[in-house]
Image (cartoon, rainbow, N blue to C red; front, top):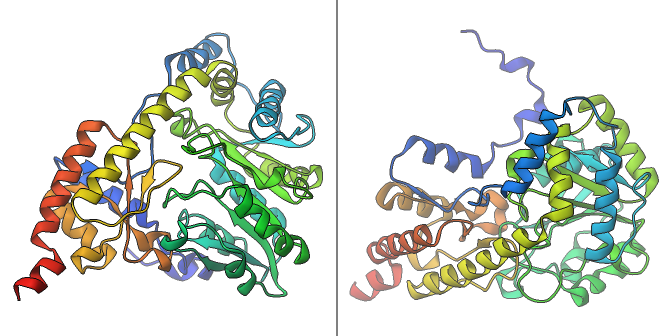
Length: 397
């Protein structure tokens, strides 16, 4: 078969495949693997939400919706965000329903960036932000965050990365992969820099309901930030609806209108069946959601204790459903640790450098898995570390 590589865009060629999916594909090829890799709830979408989608199909809801999404869903989203973060978004003008938060990120960056504009991306971070910035002909600029700061974005680190081309700051807290959060004081420390440098913030708050200490604070709720923030959220994590692919964006009407214009030509609208399911989740899903969050919190404590018991240093994650322990005890790189653990003990985790260079030396462990699988995975990791403990081997030598 002849190569067609010469026809592929150079921009696309520069983007590496997802480090998460690389290990996911390896897991799919192996037997007996316990996966703490892919960030997906192990809960099935609650029955009443699935039933609502089934009922909508029975009633013939199989058509397009408004490009913005069902008005009744946008009304529920508006009411929900007012309860959650205290901001009132107009359902008609300031809310757009998207195909997951991933589409919302893409739409926001395509709306905001001119070629060469810089997107400030705190790292370690979710794998999509920098590549999507590149695909929109922007330049992704990593802003380093550190374990010693519990991966909070510090004002001095942000200020050091500002240039005349800086235009967008992506904030994603609680964080995938670290589990770090930003409280109100942390966010307030960034405001002068954001406003002085005329930055627009894309705030990905998909894990906001999975906050285990205090209440999540959105930067959009702080003085002067509502119009300057494109707030993104969705149903995948809190409501166990990953496969439904329903997210949304809230923000200034001009920005939402521009995002909708792109959405019209590329997607048309999010699937109506998913929107009907999301509507049920908004109206009646909080009890089940709280039950799942309580369960994640129990697992969070379990895996953190287990990792520390086997000698892996790990700060306490305060949100999402990830731990981000150091592999320094092994003396290995992140990728070598993950490859060895998968081969020798059949446990799948994700190397930290998949989330940016600053993630090297760490691994992401997703605890949205059963208690039995978490306990077994940690035991196997302990066995692996006993064989590859750099400190113990050095002492023997």
